[in-house]
Every structure is written in structure tokens, then in C-alpha cells.
Image (cartoon, rainbow, N blue to C red; front, side):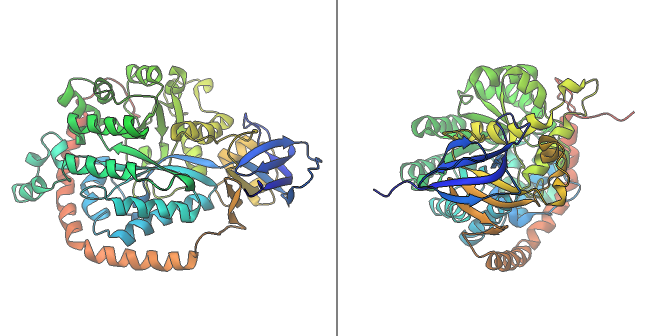
Length: 498
């Protein structure tokens, strides 16, 4: 058996577990773990050394919610809310072959890595349903870039048009047949595919685990959601679902189930310690108490929630209820970048917008960093997110000579208020370098850029007719879903102008 590699990182400032200070220290890495946090002048025999003078070492940021399939569609829309994003999905994500699926995921992973992110919970979509080849290819993309991931195929047995009460009927007559004819793959086919993938999963050694993501409760029949839970139980899969992201969805839950969406999912047995809600903007106090009781989590995506006019998620209320909260970016067609520093900043900003909230109810900067590291790690189920002995050596190194850090006054404040990812120089995942001097080690970035441009041009042409149709129905979708939204009055999550 080969001897375990030992690396002593010296000269750096190392973020403490509370994320409110970064004293000078040395780090001993053994294999893929942090073995010790040592005094700055420590010496260790038989260890290679890495001089990190002038660097701030932080736990790698962890993205609690993203969509790898969205990277080729960044910048796709402007004045879209969630309903309009879903209405445009046929062209935004259409025409993808195996090459485009892997390419999009690689773009997503590289962007995260270059901005100090070491792991992601990725809800990846394939239409009309997941494929074994597609999931293998997507997993290989993460492994090539060097990130850890929970890869949770985003699945449903109903389309947006089937799932939204009255939507097809709200369209002009000439568009109803096309909308009504759209279909996802059948329930049995989807579940059978995922069972086969779970039984043969081969990417665990690369830090890529399989999850499952019944995408939106309204888009899934009860039998389908229960089938997903059966697979989750059998194979120990983490589950994440978009729950009460938009007000119209919360209203749809009242229509369909006579309860909140989360309460209905709980009746079906889905809300467990391996379960997390993505977004949760319109969760009620009772929903938050339920999440806490079940040991479930919430992935907070403040940027996407503002971008899509969904509202402000109750992050502070969730924390006070005892819910595990992490921070995510959402996908690049709904938030348009994968910058976890920006995601932290927007989460902290959003917490200050609640009318009547006192400053002790706002998210503080050190707390926000902990949510984006240890909080997101808990949602993913990985042993990372804090620099202490025994944790995975997933680390980001920031240049303290960068303008963002001149001068260094307060490490937590500057991580959240000032840093934008541009000071990230090196990233380590599992004790191995994945980014050095801003360059990804595992792949050819010039080739990636060339392939991305070629794919974007190809997809734009291939999806032109579909885009034209989506543009025609979009105003009717918006009108219908915004009218639906008024039916949900349990909580307020949007600011009201005077």
C-alpha cells in the first residue's frame, strides 16, 4: 500500500471555525483530510511543504443548489419570473445531445471551481427523462473538473402545462394542442432507469454521489413521488425538490392538495433527514417547524429568488426553527452565474429587507459564510465545510494582495461584502490541487471555450422555431400564473410598494 501523502501548508491566514477571524497558522494535510491546524512556525518531519504566505485559506464554498444543464443558457432571459422560465424551458434546454449535456456541466463546474467552490448539489435535467449514459457523462464532467457533487437527476411525470391548473385552457386555442401534447417519460421508465443507475454507480471514488430530485411537487403524481422515495430509501440517496419557490406554486398546492406543498410531501413520506427544500420562499411557519422536526434542510438561493421575482425566503425564521440552511446559486438560466461569493452577499442583503426586522434578525457575515460552507456541506452529506482536524481537505486560497483585501480589516465582512471570486488563486479538493494560479488543472480551458461557443451557435439555430412558439405563449402563461398567485395568502414574501 502506498504511503499516505503529507503536505504542510505554511505562512497563510486560516479561517477559524466560527468564520470570524483568520490567524496565521499552518495546516497539515494527510491524504484527503486535514490532520492538524498548527502554530504558524510549526515543523513537521517527512511532510512536503507549500508556502502560502500572503494567502487566506478558507473552506471551499459549497453550492447547495445548482443546475449543470443551465450553463449553456446563461443570459437567456430578462424579465422572466419562474413561470416564464418554465414556459421557455423547451428552447432554453432543448436540442441537447450527450456532448452538450457534458459540456454544459463542465462549464458549470469550472466556473464554480474558479470562484472557490469545491462541491455542488446539482439537479440536472434530461428531457423527456434521465438516461444512464447522460448521468455517467455528467458525473465524468464533475470528476474531470475536480469538484465533488451530489448529482440528482431532476425528474417528473407531468409537464409544466399538465401540472399547472388551468394553464392549457388559458392559452390561445391555436397553441393548446401543442402544449397539451408535451409529455415526460413514463413513471415506470424513469424509476427503472434510476434504479439501474443506482445499482451500477461507479463515481463514488471521485466524490460524485447519486441523488434524486422529483423536481416540483405539482409536476409529480403521488405515485411518482412515492417511487422516488422508495429508491432514496433503498440506496440512501439524498433528495432535493423545488418546494414553494413561487407564489403561484404555493397556490397550486392549495388547489391540488388542500394544504401546503411540503405538508403533502410529508404525508407521502418524503420529508426525511436526507431531504432538502430548494428555495422555499413561500414556506409557512408550520412548514419550517416540519422541516426542523424531520431533520431536513433548506437551500437558500436569494439571487435567483430576486431575479425571478419569487420573493424573499425566510432564512432567519428557518434557522431559528432549527432547520439546516445552506446557500446556493441556482442554475445559470435563472441566476446567470455560479459565484458563491455573490450568493452569500445576496443572501445577507435579502435578510435586511424584511419590514420591521431588527438587526439581530439579519444574517451576519460570519454566519453567512458558515451557511455557505458547513451548512451546505450538511445538506450534501459531506464531511467538509470547516477547517478542523478530520475534515476533508477541500480548501480555497485567496490572494491577500488583491485589491479586495487591501487593507485587511475584517475577514468575515470582506468575504461577504467585498470578495467576488477574483482573489481566488488556488483550490484543493481532497488534498489534491484542482486550481493553481487561477488555471484549472484537469482540462483544457481553451478547448472548453471553443466548444461552448460552437454549441451555443448550434443550439440557437436548432431551437429557433421552438423559441418563437414559447415567445407567443409567454404572455398568456404569465397572466395565468400571476392570477393564480393571488390565491395564496398564508404568508407574505414580497415587498409592497407604497
